[in-house]
Length: 372
Ligand code: SF4
Image (cartoon, rainbow, N blue to C red; front, side):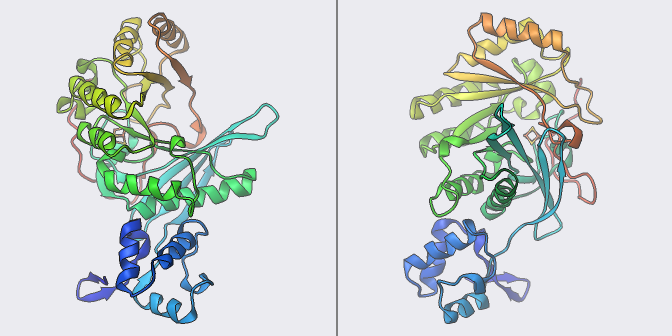
């Protein structure tokens, strides 16, 4: 199972393997199955990358492993702390690429931590080119491996333990990239994180978001994937969605509806709609009534997100009086909706703001010239 790098054989990175592939790797090495459990635990619970530290493996086995394999990991390059407790992390990958992830704490009235949520990245850049999104402006550079996604979580978990005396409580796949475009890695990483030999987080505390990749939504349903699903909707009609989300021209709201009805029929689970409120674009009471129609397709709740303005983007955060009227119109239509205030504004850590701006090549994008 040695990987080739040009003519030179390179060591296999155990963190690039799925759980099943790790088992096959052990079988190919002539090892008993429990060895893959031990390796898994060292890598994903104890964050150990050196075989010499894996003390329940014999010295011979550690030597044998180090000859053919390695435990690659991402490195924390820097972190920025917001006045509100939000922390943005910049990670370096093994190649020239970097990604960001964010930890957003919620506190109880006595100041103790309540929810500690991580927003993780699933790709370097993104191909879908939504007009309001800084990541989309990078274009798509590459998918992250399951190990690179899990490493973000494990490393941030260590920080929350040090800072708040406990680990993370929730994960949202809403950082850089479109998670369902990197379906296999996202599903595998969620399986790792929910495993008792890793963090053992409940799948109900994991939310995967998508701009509406209908084939993958149906696949989630067919596979009965247990985590929660969120739809990045952001506009309540095809006409408006076409203007800000290029994906809508090929996968429109009718296609999204059909996939969500299938998802609900198969799983019995509703969804959350994420809706960035933009001033004088999608924030009128008429927009709210159109959004209400979508919210009633299947059981759902709606998160209205107050946008953190992004440099170079003409869409701006909606004003408060327009938000109030919008929420009233949603309530009149019996929509369960909450307002999510921006967090980490002072460190550019809000929804749509994550991007590596310097030293990164420009990737592929389906974005077109937008009319707004
Ligand atoms: S909002 Fe999501 S899908 Fe759209 S460009 Fe940004 S990362 Fe990609």
